[in-house]
Image (tube, rainbow, N blue to C red):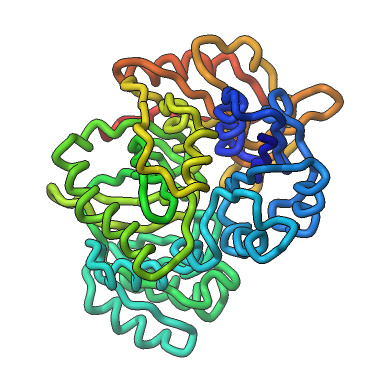
Length: 423
């Protein structure tokens, strides 16, 4: 098969890394890709939301399967674009329809879906600029901390957790009337705060059947001890040590099954990944959010643990035969540490030369924000390079990642040295 991966980050490099290992893959393309994917695939400078250019590429290169990495093309309807085009409809797309992608594209839509299917989640209400005063009154009925979520896509940064009621009211106003997150915050969901420890569960579904992939825990805050601004993610650990068999059974019965059954009941075309952000409150799981694709950097810790041929899994998704698959998982822990540009997640500089990549051994290097510039690898994003390591114990795996990161160098490089502190 000729396969196209859409995206340019660490998640997409991981997809390319796994797909390139498959005997079912003949030619591999990544659009737009990065310096890492350039080593194992053909990069093409095409935007993930330029559907016309993607169509031309798919037809020219006789692509058989498209694997969609990020959420934007899914929310904008790339799967429907293929399904509705006579030239493209025979091509497999791994990613849900536009309706399915609303589970991530709208926080309110996701909450309504959760409530309809009796899936445990936090109590909530949503507000617009016209009901900002009602929103402030609703905040008065809650106790701190206060959770405000921009309804739309805000690149993983649209959630605020605030301790002070007055600050929460000010931020609600900022989001709704001053458009703090642009169109994403035209509607804001206010939610009860759930106190517990978070984890992510990943499911691959063909719309009827599903397989559960390894769990992971990611670290969103820029600062050690989970302090400071939210980022796209500073690292991940898989599996999550506290997600034992009893807890995973609860997740399956109370959350995964009713989610997949809900999609089927509502006739939502969904062939792809469901990323369920959960929190363990006491001994019970509750859903914080859905994403409609794999997480980043969780992918860099989860997919390397999947021993089953990834392209074969994707073929079963296309054929709706996932019930015929036994997925094989590496029992060891995988840990991913992300290196980032100085200043990230606020202003940062690009184009800094990266050295030491070739010196890394006993770990896997995944490029996130990199590009080639005159045969040199340079920084091209906030999150730059992820280093993933395996060991029987996650602490030992982390030691390997940290040991190898010391060989990497670029100007103002930063990474968190405390991953796993809460496990």
